[in-house]
Image 1: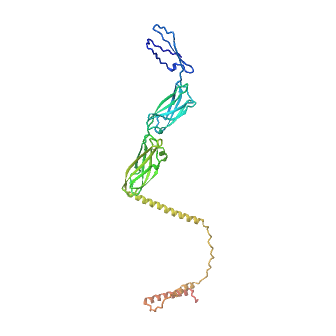
Image 2: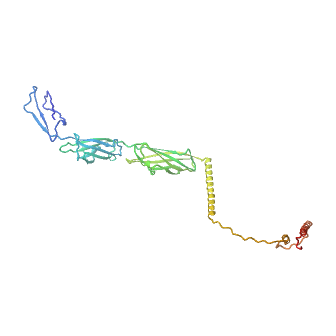
Image 3: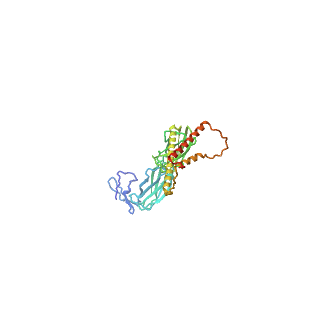
Length: 390
């Protein structure tokens, strides 16, 4: 390659002319400069000035990438580059050092050997660097006998994590009643740009006056990686006593997963407590009666089924055949005498001897009537011919 530089009406003793490197020959060739001086009549000097120089190739870092492109403090930053000549040819097998600028001093991070494609990849932990939001890194190579050394600065802006968490308390029902259990909802929202972690051990309560409280519903999977913009709901059960109001305060801590920073918030609210309406007691009473009735009916059915099963399972026994009773012929007169005998023989009673009294007139008349009836019966039997004498 030939390049021509000239000046006219030059009167100074020093001649300065710039030549670009691409206008020169490189090793293993040499670049030769020829200087010729001539006068106003274009008559050149008898002696030309010829100088030859050997030039090195320049190097550079190309294809520089940062992943993620907009890193947040706490991220692992991957810085990749390729060492090449000024003409884009890769330079493999060279020791590359990564540094960062820390309070007027360049601190070494690590060193790598460029691979077969002349690439290096450095993984940077942003938490181990200074607390500046703008970091300056530098890739350096010391060069060799044929290629010049190279140092190139790279500026990376780190975004600081915004650890923001909001919370609110709300009762599940319209009112909270005395001597009953109530549900309180805790709403959580990640309003920052960082990923947080919340566990049940990071949630504490303070109730005035003191009441029994416990968590009955929580989404552990979502809260373990609580991402920006997400919301979650935690249900808490309280056993409310005979009080008029209570104040609930919730203390909550969250952990930034990347930076291990802690975020602490608290939320408080006062809740009013009302007397339970009469309808509630009636409903409870009716519920108890219905449940009791169902249990009684179930018990009766159970007992009846058990008895029926026992009756079905017991074998059927044939009835015992009784011998027919033999009768005997008895005369009518004997049948009539039997009750008389029974009537005439009064039952024996162990009584003390009593003094016999004379019967009254009424008693006498009744006795006479009885005697007449008996005599009439005898006479009738005689007429029919059924008397004992005949």
